[in-house]
Length: 158
Image (cartoon, rainbow, N blue to C red; front, side, top):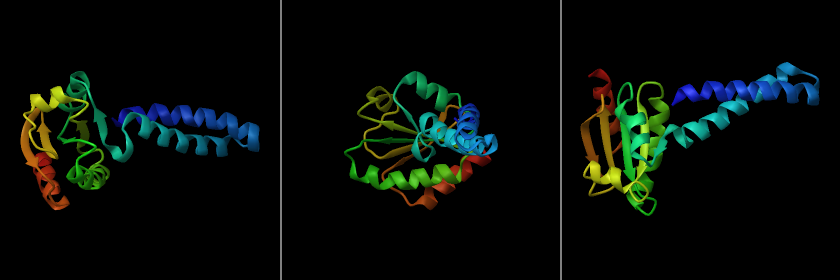
């Protein structure tokens, strides 16, 4: 996930250098502004808002979850689900807190019904923790952030 941010920042810095030189006659100012813009755009385009990657296909799921290094929290949700909307900020905050240590993925069960069937998701929100491509924990319903932290911490130690 994070590996795509570097090229985005570099492209942003290169374009910013040009714009900075043309606008302010200062390539350094442009490079700094362009790099920041590149990071912002790259993060949104490649990771998604809040550091949680959206997955819709089995191929994408395999790459981002099953072949991931380290634990991955997968949030199965639906846009119409009230408890899912309530859980969303908690998951996004955890993604920021555990950035670089754990992956965070969300699967819309309406857009990825095959993945929901594959993991026997019958109730949402459902949060699955994967380690080395295997489900190690299943949490159904909304839980306090502390509960997700303790599960993630245990997964990181394994």
